[in-house]
Image 1: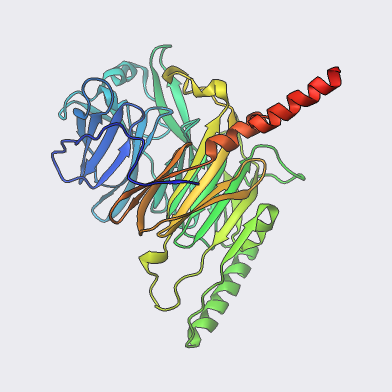
Image 2: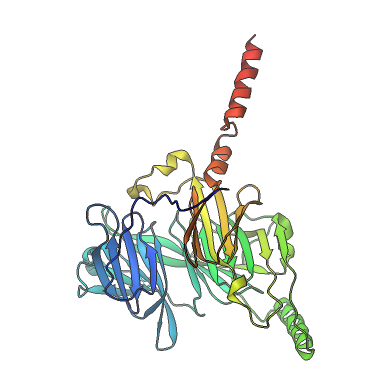
Length: 428
């Protein structure tokens, strides 16, 4: 790892002319940037001759709390608040929104669009309502398939991306609630989802899971509604509540010690995970089994009774790297599944960041020490960009090199020379 002082790989800097003070923002693929302020979202072009020029603007149905863009499916999803209620909505076909007063179609998720109205969707932006039984806390989109994962207090809800085919030129994008992942003893603050890999982060904990489509040892996912009042769940809840009451009755502050569990050992973390299938029987991919890959817990600062921001985790990210022939895929082929070569997980404390490899084997690759308190970090295959209290820090990472070794174990020049010498000796 090398820290680059007073140097970054950016060629230029542009100012985005927002009409309102920005509250939320996210990238919109290689050519767009979304900026949200209150109940309004502005899209700006970030490629071509019209750099940082307004592209379109539209009003949301509530104040935007979270904003995420999915390049697979080309849609925008937001957690919104209105009248002290929280909603989850997806904004589809947003590129057709020419003016702020253009017509907009609002429909429920999974609703079958009637034939006479389908052609009108071609030139209209659609708002897809996604009702949930619990308040959505965080969201993440799969960069490969475009599926949407929503984090709630005690569960994660997976919406699979689907298309209603009108004709070959214009499919209508839709979603289906296909899976519920019930998670106890951890409240998600941030989540990340990529082709069956799920990363969940609370203030001081990180859990990485892998959803598998093949049953193991005859174990299958529950197809009946999950019952929180089952005997096992009640026993666990009673044990937890009794322990909590006992601790509360004594004047002590209980702090759990730091812990790192890799592979199968992470199942001993105390976090229970249960799958509940809610999709149709003809669904192409079903998840039957969950595999625990990593559990990491950090110790709070015992000098204060309140959890300080100085020890809270942030910037959870799963970074996929694909096969070489998949890296040059054109935009029209984004709907096709790419072959995953390596997957990395990054998360950070205010003064240190952690990078893990989570495919084939789970191992800690790098630890990054920041000279200043960090606010946010973004991982790319070549660099780690860290926004600190005063600067933009940049670190080199080994993601591309590790992925290259996965594809070609003899990528190092030393190994290649040694192999060539051995071949020459064999020929003699």
